[in-house]
Image 1 (cartoon, helix red, strand yellow):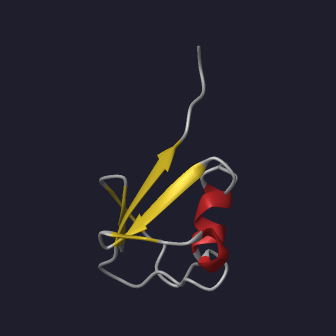
Image 2: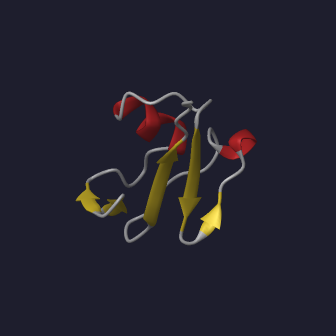
Length: 64
């Protein structure tokens, strides 16, 4: 199980890209933190989540 934004989900073995797709979120307007470290966008495809990982996905919102 992986903790994503405070919720325990069965996402171990998935890449960051796959998790974002499952969430319906594109990589363009988000920042991803894995175990308190920012994941570079270039590494989303190669970063595989493991059991016990903690992930925070932050969406950027524009406004005015």
